[in-house]
Length: 249
Image (cartoon, rainbow, N blue to C red; front, side, top):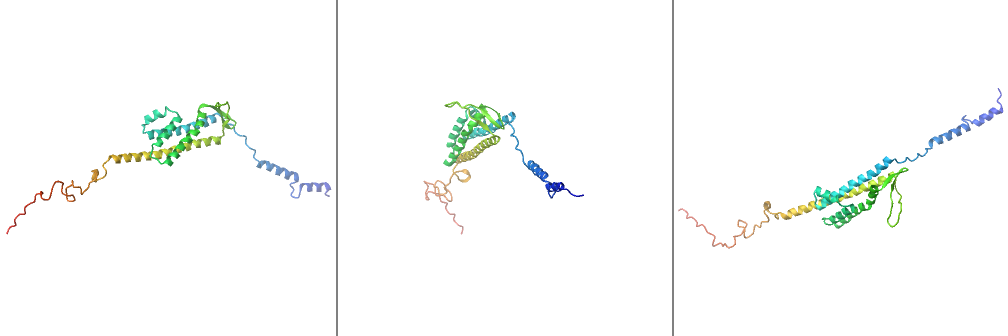
């Protein structure tokens, strides 16, 4: 059977490999769609997740502030009950002031006191975040957490305080670092207190000597004996001498 020109046209259109321009182009286009990942729609934050984020921050802060309370009690020599009574009746600002003053009385170097005061100042600088979480309403805003608060110092404004999930984790890490800083202060303060107690104990005990009897000067004129001199007020002449016994002939 003779091949007509129409058949050659169709074969040429399909190509040598037989796949054809239309089929090959369609295959390439469909493959590109499969490899292209459509961006997922950001998941909106739920109310439960918003409550969890705020509660988590306040829980971390409470643990850190409890460490501050313990540090104050240790530096002031308070019992556990006294510590609770004192620290639960004062504000955070007053706690930091007491802690700073107590640090100044510790046997620490000037550099240590400066570094420790900086750690206390870091707590004060982050306290506004704690106050915002504790005293303001909040809720989800898209995929983020937002706080509903007003600023009325000098003028009235509505700050845009919004946390993304990543910012929330960053805030938690900041509070953890504050607690670690208090751990460092407490360890150094404990060491200073222990050394002070040891020095006081040594100062109240006899200054050395055999079995804690105090210093003994073996050449003290008041100390008779082989290594001591003759007691004062006594001469060699007054010391009774034993007459030698006559020897038998």
